[in-house]
Structure formats: structure tokens, C-alpha cells
Length: 213
Image (tube, rainbow, N blue to C red; front, side, top):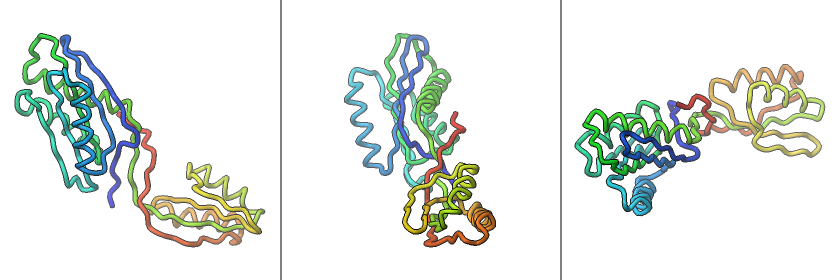
């Protein structure tokens, strides 16, 4: 699976262009139904607005891609909004940009720039993550080895998902595919082979993305 970006926590952004207000509301959406419900709720919230233009990308492979100009000139709102999401590599997302008309026509080029700028502003206020394929596994060690393992994991910014302390210590972690073998070797060397890796399974996981727009 190729990594792709998702919205972990939605956000809102607003710009003003020639007295027209453009308000972008963005959410994570795992299904078309979820996206459609959000669109309807947003339209009700901003019932007095001139336009509520929309764009969505649903599915790991962008199986569902939809957009709407909602009365704006064709190709000046929904499609440009969608292009921002595509260029950012974000999936499982729905965005609604609400426009309150300010009395001055922006022209087709002005509309495209305004709707795209609104989406970008909204994305600045979202928490974005990257879905990656990885390996989830347990590390079992004695109490002498736990400090060394915690030091190694912390140095690589690998969070401990769960820990159990009995007569031994068991830590649960998830790492990217390409990291697994090297990490296991490092832990094995650091504990002189006393740490044991168990219960490996392939998973998808969300890694926080610090390279937001």
C-alpha cells in the first residue's frame, strides 16, 4: 500500500475577497454517506449563503471523487477545490466552501483562486496524518532490558501502544515495513539477545504528518 494523507481532525478556515466571505469547513469522511450528511448539515447551517460548493475524495484508491459548483459558473469552484485535495494527496475527506456574496463579481479566474485559497486556509487548521502500511508486534524482555528498549524507541519517535509488567515486560509497538528488521536487530544487539519479538502482524496505521501546507 502506498502511503496517503488523511484528515485526522477537521478544521475551518476563512478568507475575504472583494467583500465576499469564503468559509471552508473540512472533515474526515470514511464513506460517501458520511460526506453527503456533512454537506447537508453545512447547507442548513449556512442557509442564507449564496453558495455552498463541495468536494470529496473517498477511498484508499480515490474510488469516489465528487464535486459541485452549487450555482457558481462551471469549473470555478468544486473542481478547483478538488484539485487542492488531489495535489495535497489527501483522501477520505470532504470540504464545503460557503460563499457570502460581497456585491462585486470576481470573474472566473478570481473565483478559482478564492475557492482554492479557502480550502488551503481550512487545511492549515486541520490535523493531518499519513496512513502507512506497517508491522505491529510485541517485544518481550526482562527488567534489565526495558530501559535500553525504551531509549531506542524514543530515539526513533516510535510510541509504545501498550505495556504489561509481570515477571517480564511486554511492549506493543507498530512501525513501518522498512523499519522493522533494522529495529529488531538493534533491540536484539542492545539486550544481548534477551529481548524476544512476538505476534507479528501486518497493519495499516496513522502517522502524524508534520509537513502540512
